[in-house]
Length: 159
Length: 358
Image (cartoon, rainbow over all chains, first blue to last red; front, side, top):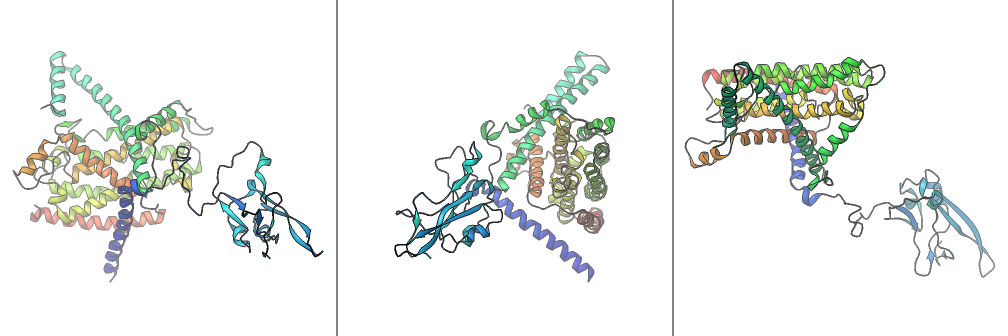
């Protein structure tokens, strides 16, 4: 009984090793077609980034310079290392009521780990991850960005 | 037809005509030494390049592709960098042993080349105990590794060296048994007669099942003996930074690195000699058209081709399998490889006595 188990162990082990070698061998033979390396500085113009690549957080603005951010600070709370700071203001509505809106959406790129938690936390899909990744600058203050465009306002109907 | 055998013989005759008694031999020593050292350097460059390309292909990368055509001069540039770098000896290290260790490892790798048969009639020393010489000398390299680990005055180095000691002492047993299987079939320890016994078919074809088992065990054991992944516990870069050569830098590190690759070449050359017929071309039956075509390929190409095929297999192991833990490593040897190879040795003996091989 022991011997049977021993022999089947050996065969299973050899089989699983061969399965792994088959896969890497297939890769070695098909590396020309399957390779995913981007020759980055050479192909700057034709660079193709994956759809879900996380470069930096940007706020989506439509053609009327309107965004969907209500200033709820869900992203600020979700952020693990205080990358986002939302400064709110109160707009005076035409009927005289005051309404909370964002003044500045401050984003510290130098603190960001690109964890995507703020995008997942946003209830109105106001922010997304962009595919830009060439972030090097000479002055650190350039990395603190204000994401809402000047004079932008919240889109009608977004609560 | 100019072959390596003819060139070697004509040099020998020419030297004997020109000089008197001891001189031809001394000059031949120097020539052989120069050849081996240049082979050593060439192998280092070629094998490191091959390893980097093979690993890149298996991981769907490109590998080195900047220096020279398709990155071919990358290893030469790396070597130049290592030569220029400072070879540090850490404070508190045993300076003599520390500086001696890389040379011992390298010299062992060179000495082991002596009985190898590189082509038909091209051999440095056709000693009558060739295989024994090989397995005896190759186990000395563990002393170099232990020396490096001990003299570094570094706990990572010492741990790596101790692991390497345990590993090499264990895996030599099954490598020895696998070699013995072929020695039993051939009835001789001499490398040239082992190769000649495969003129009518390589042992891997003639010996069928028991020799296949011996071949697989041999490949596993020599992978462990050369401290290659998945048995690279002596280096284990994720646990021990670099194991026994943590403290080495510059050319002293390069010697360890070169010795690793030359050791791979040497054990693969032995594997090719024992199981795949050394320089013997591939023959099926006798006197067929196919055999004639195979005979036109030079014997040195056969030898190098077989050796590089086995080197590729060992690289394939490295880039496929995860590293074993130390207990798994010893389990594999003492509970699996050793009993199987002992049983296999009995099987081979029975086969040799009864003549159950082709």
